[in-house]
Image (cartoon, rainbow, N blue to C red; front, side):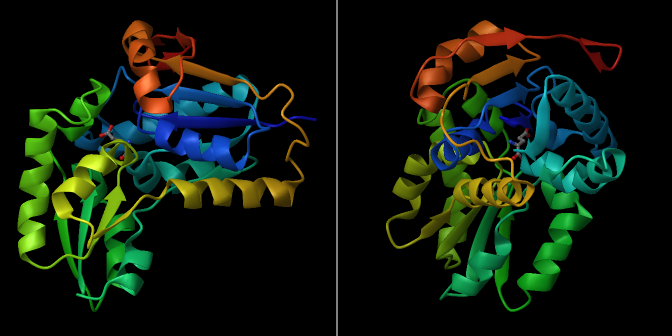
Length: 269
Ligand code: DGL
Protein backbone atom coordinates (compact mmCIF):
# COMPACT_ATOMS: atom_id res chain seq x y z
CA UNK A 1 0.00 0.00 0.00
CA UNK A 2 1.27 3.46 -0.86
CA UNK A 3 0.19 6.33 1.35
CA UNK A 4 -0.38 9.75 -0.14
CA UNK A 5 0.76 12.80 1.80
CA UNK A 6 -1.57 15.80 1.57
CA UNK A 7 0.06 19.22 1.87
CA UNK A 8 -1.38 22.70 2.03
CA UNK A 9 -0.25 26.29 2.04
CA UNK A 10 -1.62 29.66 0.97
CA UNK A 11 0.66 29.46 -2.07
CA UNK A 12 4.17 28.40 -3.04
CA UNK A 13 5.65 28.59 0.47
CA UNK A 14 4.88 24.99 1.31
CA UNK A 15 7.01 23.94 -1.66
CA UNK A 16 10.01 24.58 0.63
CA UNK A 17 8.59 21.80 2.80
CA UNK A 18 7.74 19.65 -0.24
CA UNK A 19 11.40 19.82 -1.34
CA UNK A 20 12.54 18.54 2.06
CA UNK A 21 9.86 15.82 2.14
CA UNK A 22 10.92 14.62 -1.32
CA UNK A 23 14.49 14.38 -0.12
CA UNK A 24 13.56 12.52 3.04
CA UNK A 25 10.73 10.38 1.63
CA UNK A 26 11.23 10.03 -2.13
CA UNK A 27 8.85 7.07 -2.32
CA UNK A 28 5.72 8.84 -1.13
CA UNK A 29 3.16 10.37 -3.46
CA UNK A 30 2.13 13.90 -2.57
CA UNK A 31 -0.93 15.98 -3.34
CA UNK A 32 -0.29 19.68 -2.65
CA UNK A 33 -2.90 22.41 -2.59
CA UNK A 34 -1.79 26.05 -2.98
CA UNK A 35 -4.66 28.31 -1.94
CA UNK A 36 -3.54 31.16 -4.15
CA UNK A 37 -7.08 32.53 -4.39
CA UNK A 38 -6.56 33.63 -0.77
CA UNK A 39 -2.83 34.35 -0.52
CA UNK A 40 -1.55 35.94 1.69
CA UNK A 41 -3.04 34.26 4.75
CA UNK A 42 -0.83 36.37 6.98
CA UNK A 43 -3.08 39.42 6.83
CA UNK A 44 -6.32 37.49 7.40
CA UNK A 45 -8.41 36.76 10.47
CA UNK A 46 -7.74 33.50 12.28
CA UNK A 47 -11.36 32.31 11.85
CA UNK A 48 -11.09 32.83 8.11
CA UNK A 49 -7.86 30.81 7.87
CA UNK A 50 -9.51 28.04 9.91
CA UNK A 51 -12.40 27.88 7.47
CA UNK A 52 -10.10 27.64 4.45
CA UNK A 53 -7.91 24.95 5.96
CA UNK A 54 -10.87 22.84 7.05
CA UNK A 55 -12.26 22.74 3.51
CA UNK A 56 -8.79 22.15 1.99
CA UNK A 57 -8.23 19.25 4.40
CA UNK A 58 -11.56 17.74 3.39
CA UNK A 59 -10.58 18.14 -0.26
CA UNK A 60 -7.12 16.57 0.21
CA UNK A 61 -8.61 13.59 2.05
CA UNK A 62 -11.09 13.15 -0.81
CA UNK A 63 -8.07 13.12 -3.16
CA UNK A 64 -6.71 10.11 -1.26
CA UNK A 65 -4.37 11.77 1.25
CA UNK A 66 -4.05 9.94 4.58
CA UNK A 67 -1.79 12.34 6.44
CA UNK A 68 -1.90 16.13 6.21
CA UNK A 69 1.17 18.36 6.41
CA UNK A 70 0.10 21.92 7.16
CA UNK A 71 3.08 23.44 5.33
CA UNK A 72 2.26 26.94 6.46
CA UNK A 73 3.12 28.53 9.80
CA UNK A 74 0.16 30.89 9.73
CA UNK A 75 -2.34 28.07 9.11
CA UNK A 76 -0.62 25.86 11.70
CA UNK A 77 -0.65 28.35 14.55
CA UNK A 78 -4.16 29.49 13.63
CA UNK A 79 -5.83 26.17 12.92
CA UNK A 80 -3.88 23.03 13.85
CA UNK A 81 -5.75 22.34 17.11
CA UNK A 82 -9.04 23.04 15.38
CA UNK A 83 -8.21 20.71 12.45
CA UNK A 84 -7.16 17.90 14.80
CA UNK A 85 -10.52 18.22 16.56
CA UNK A 86 -12.46 18.34 13.27
CA UNK A 87 -10.63 15.34 11.73
CA UNK A 88 -9.82 13.09 14.71
CA UNK A 89 -8.88 10.12 12.52
CA UNK A 90 -6.30 12.02 10.48
CA UNK A 91 -2.69 12.54 11.57
CA UNK A 92 -1.47 16.12 11.03
CA UNK A 93 2.05 17.52 10.90
CA UNK A 94 2.12 21.22 11.72
CA UNK A 95 4.68 23.93 12.21
CA UNK A 96 5.59 26.48 14.83
CA UNK A 97 8.39 29.03 14.50
CA UNK A 98 11.67 27.44 15.65
CA UNK A 99 12.06 29.79 18.62
CA UNK A 100 13.05 26.97 20.98
CA UNK A 101 16.17 25.76 19.12
CA UNK A 102 17.10 29.37 18.41
CA UNK A 103 16.86 30.30 22.10
CA UNK A 104 19.02 27.28 23.00
CA UNK A 105 21.70 28.09 20.44
CA UNK A 106 22.05 31.87 20.55
CA UNK A 107 25.30 33.19 22.06
CA UNK A 108 24.39 36.87 21.99
CA UNK A 109 20.95 36.21 23.52
CA UNK A 110 19.26 38.13 20.70
CA UNK A 111 17.17 36.27 18.11
CA UNK A 112 15.30 37.66 15.10
CA UNK A 113 12.00 36.07 14.03
CA UNK A 114 10.53 36.67 10.57
CA UNK A 115 6.92 35.47 10.27
CA UNK A 116 3.55 36.80 9.14
CA UNK A 117 1.52 39.42 10.97
CA UNK A 118 -1.18 36.81 11.75
CA UNK A 119 1.35 34.38 13.22
CA UNK A 120 2.66 36.99 15.65
CA UNK A 121 -0.92 37.62 16.89
CA UNK A 122 -1.67 34.02 17.86
CA UNK A 123 -1.62 32.56 21.38
CA UNK A 124 0.30 29.56 20.02
CA UNK A 125 3.24 31.72 18.89
CA UNK A 126 3.20 33.88 22.01
CA UNK A 127 3.14 30.86 24.27
CA UNK A 128 6.19 29.38 22.49
CA UNK A 129 8.07 32.63 23.15
CA UNK A 130 6.83 32.69 26.75
CA UNK A 131 7.86 29.09 27.45
CA UNK A 132 11.14 28.78 25.58
CA UNK A 133 12.63 32.22 25.18
CA UNK A 134 12.32 33.77 28.64
CA UNK A 135 15.97 34.74 28.89
CA UNK A 136 16.38 35.75 25.29
CA UNK A 137 15.50 38.97 23.49
CA UNK A 138 13.17 38.19 20.60
CA UNK A 139 12.97 40.77 17.80
CA UNK A 140 10.06 40.32 15.41
CA UNK A 141 9.30 41.58 11.92
CA UNK A 142 6.44 40.58 9.63
CA UNK A 143 8.17 41.67 6.41
CA UNK A 144 5.15 43.38 4.78
CA UNK A 145 4.92 42.46 1.10
CA UNK A 146 7.52 39.69 1.17
CA UNK A 147 5.08 36.81 0.62
CA UNK A 148 3.70 38.59 -2.46
CA UNK A 149 7.20 39.16 -3.85
CA UNK A 150 7.96 35.46 -3.45
CA UNK A 151 4.63 34.50 -5.02
CA UNK A 152 5.60 36.65 -8.03
CA UNK A 153 8.87 34.75 -8.30
CA UNK A 154 10.97 37.75 -7.29
CA UNK A 155 13.51 36.14 -4.97
CA UNK A 156 16.32 38.67 -5.27
CA UNK A 157 15.12 41.90 -6.92
CA UNK A 158 15.35 45.38 -5.44
CA UNK A 159 11.95 45.44 -3.69
CA UNK A 160 12.54 42.01 -2.11
CA UNK A 161 15.95 43.22 -0.94
CA UNK A 162 14.49 46.46 0.45
CA UNK A 163 11.88 44.55 2.52
CA UNK A 164 14.51 42.21 3.96
CA UNK A 165 17.04 44.95 4.65
CA UNK A 166 14.51 47.04 6.51
CA UNK A 167 13.60 44.00 8.64
CA UNK A 168 17.12 42.74 9.27
CA UNK A 169 19.34 45.86 9.59
CA UNK A 170 17.74 47.02 12.87
CA UNK A 171 17.97 43.46 14.20
CA UNK A 172 21.67 43.31 13.31
CA UNK A 173 22.21 46.62 15.07
CA UNK A 174 20.76 45.03 18.22
CA UNK A 175 23.07 42.02 18.05
CA UNK A 176 21.12 39.08 16.59
CA UNK A 177 23.18 35.98 15.87
CA UNK A 178 20.21 33.80 14.81
CA UNK A 179 17.27 34.34 12.46
CA UNK A 180 14.21 32.10 12.64
CA UNK A 181 12.21 31.74 9.44
CA UNK A 182 8.66 31.46 10.74
CA UNK A 183 6.94 31.44 7.36
CA UNK A 184 7.37 28.70 4.78
CA UNK A 185 7.73 31.19 1.94
CA UNK A 186 10.89 32.70 3.40
CA UNK A 187 13.40 29.85 2.84
CA UNK A 188 13.25 30.78 -0.86
CA UNK A 189 15.11 33.99 0.02
CA UNK A 190 17.73 32.43 2.31
CA UNK A 191 20.57 33.37 -0.08
CA UNK A 192 19.53 37.02 0.09
CA UNK A 193 18.97 36.91 3.86
CA UNK A 194 22.39 35.31 4.37
CA UNK A 195 23.99 37.95 2.17
CA UNK A 196 22.42 40.73 4.26
CA UNK A 197 23.16 39.27 7.71
CA UNK A 198 26.60 37.87 6.86
CA UNK A 199 28.14 34.47 7.62
CA UNK A 200 28.21 35.02 11.39
CA UNK A 201 24.41 34.87 11.71
CA UNK A 202 22.67 31.52 11.61
CA UNK A 203 19.45 31.24 9.62
CA UNK A 204 17.09 28.47 10.77
CA UNK A 205 15.06 26.80 8.01
CA UNK A 206 12.40 24.55 9.56
CA UNK A 207 11.85 22.37 6.47
CA UNK A 208 14.21 19.45 7.28
CA UNK A 209 12.72 19.08 10.79
CA UNK A 210 9.19 18.96 9.35
CA UNK A 211 10.24 16.30 6.85
CA UNK A 212 11.76 14.23 9.68
CA UNK A 213 8.60 14.63 11.75
CA UNK A 214 6.50 13.44 8.78
CA UNK A 215 8.79 10.44 8.42
CA UNK A 216 8.53 9.63 12.16
CA UNK A 217 4.75 9.75 12.09
CA UNK A 218 4.50 7.64 8.95
CA UNK A 219 6.96 5.09 10.32
CA UNK A 220 4.83 4.80 13.47
CA UNK A 221 1.78 4.13 11.33
CA UNK A 222 3.63 1.66 9.07
CA UNK A 223 2.84 3.86 6.07
CA UNK A 224 6.24 4.23 4.43
CA UNK A 225 6.60 2.97 0.88
CA UNK A 226 9.46 0.57 0.08
CA UNK A 227 10.37 1.84 -3.35
CA UNK A 228 9.70 4.91 -5.43
CA UNK A 229 7.03 3.39 -7.63
CA UNK A 230 4.06 5.68 -8.07
CA UNK A 231 5.61 8.51 -6.10
CA UNK A 232 3.96 11.22 -8.14
CA UNK A 233 3.50 14.83 -7.09
CA UNK A 234 0.11 16.36 -7.84
CA UNK A 235 0.02 20.13 -7.58
CA UNK A 236 -3.27 21.98 -7.47
CA UNK A 237 -3.86 25.71 -7.15
CA UNK A 238 -7.00 27.69 -6.41
CA UNK A 239 -5.39 30.53 -8.40
CA UNK A 240 -3.92 30.83 -11.87
CA UNK A 241 -2.14 27.59 -12.80
CA UNK A 242 -0.11 29.21 -15.59
CA UNK A 243 1.55 31.74 -13.26
CA UNK A 244 2.79 29.16 -10.80
CA UNK A 245 3.71 26.68 -13.52
CA UNK A 246 6.01 29.19 -15.21
CA UNK A 247 7.87 29.85 -11.98
CA UNK A 248 8.12 26.27 -10.74
CA UNK A 249 11.74 25.69 -11.81
CA UNK A 250 12.61 28.63 -9.58
CA UNK A 251 10.94 27.01 -6.57
CA UNK A 252 11.52 23.30 -7.15
CA UNK A 253 14.28 23.18 -9.74
CA UNK A 254 12.08 21.38 -12.27
CA UNK A 255 8.82 21.67 -14.22
CA UNK A 256 5.57 20.00 -13.19
CA UNK A 257 2.04 20.37 -14.51
CA UNK A 258 -0.43 22.11 -12.21
CA UNK A 259 -4.19 21.70 -12.06
CA UNK A 260 -6.51 24.44 -10.92
CA UNK A 261 -9.69 24.31 -8.93
CA UNK A 262 -12.09 27.10 -7.96
CA UNK A 263 -13.67 27.99 -4.64
CA UNK A 264 -17.45 28.02 -4.92
CA UNK A 265 -19.56 29.13 -1.96
CA UNK A 266 -16.82 28.17 0.44
CA UNK A 267 -16.34 24.72 -1.11
CA UNK A 268 -13.66 23.19 -3.33
CA UNK A 269 -14.60 21.00 -6.25
N1 DGL B 1 3.54 30.36 3.94
C1 DGL B 1 2.72 30.81 4.99
C2 DGL B 1 3.35 30.76 6.34
O1 DGL B 1 4.16 29.90 6.56
C3 DGL B 1 1.73 31.90 4.76
C4 DGL B 1 2.17 33.14 4.10
C5 DGL B 1 0.96 33.99 3.81
O2 DGL B 1 0.13 33.53 3.05
O3 DGL B 1 0.85 35.08 4.38
O4 DGL B 1 3.02 31.50 7.23
